[in-house]
Length: 195
Image 1 (cartoon, rainbow, N blue to C red):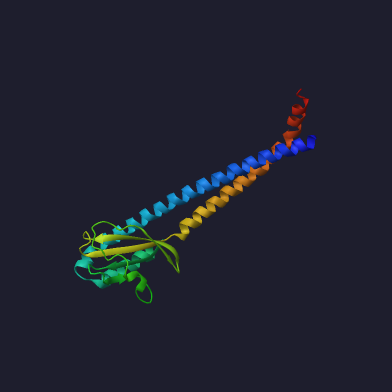
Image 2: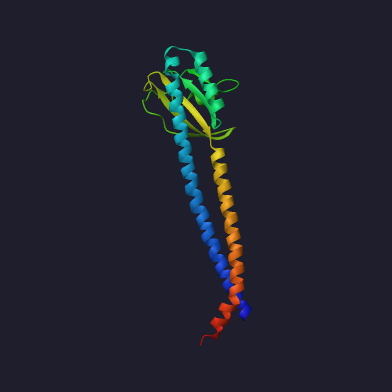
């Protein structure tokens, strides 16, 4: 009977720790992932706005070589950037960082002349999932800049943090179970002596 009570106490505490830990991983993992992706979206938007700021003079003077150097160097320097391209006010490509030509699938995306940065677009590509931001050139009258960043490094960081949290949770569960097993006989003995 004492062993049964001991096992029930240990199992109950272990189950409680496991449920609390799993809930914490789900809640924290989801909120951390959302926050990190929101930061990545802000970073992509900042990058697009920065390239737009740097490109204005070259777009106005139709200096395509300068624009090509700008986007190529920008993507090379900013490792999180997957690609960048600049469209003129008619939607024609002025510069891009794609090897082998500009992808047809991107030709139909956002040739608008809006003065506001466009919404973040999530794209599934052979590079993985990307988050593309756009920024207007001269309030959209001169064209738009597109910059896409890789999502994988961010999601990998969230995954590593969740795995580390689960490892800590497993260690707490083991230590908690050991402590419970050590003190359960005393608690069980006291509980059995109660009238």
